[in-house]
Image: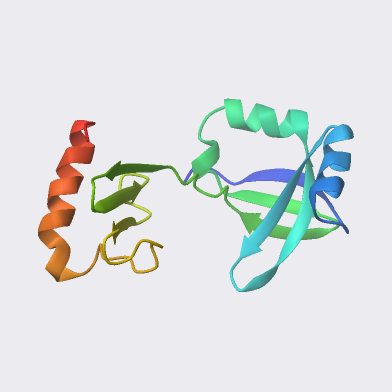
Length: 140
């Protein structure tokens, strides 16, 4: 983690699409602070200040002290979840952030609705290994 940076914010009393659009029209970014077993808190941060912080580098690994209405909270930006999948006639295998945020394997013959993730089932270890290799090669 890099140094702690402060970020001024305004607490929002409304959430949802309409409220978010109104915040954006005012030159702010709607955001939510969540985690640590606390209820989510809707805030708005300045667009230009946030853009400056993002393009300065290290944004995703920075610890922010967010001051919203006199209350200070520590927060980090969430990791963006990016998935890559490979599909065969029978299986779909997905890795989230190169497997760091999880993997999924679904057997479409037995579970067409994809309700049971088989990625951690030892009986499917060879299927996972084969599809992982195929995904790494970038072919299907």
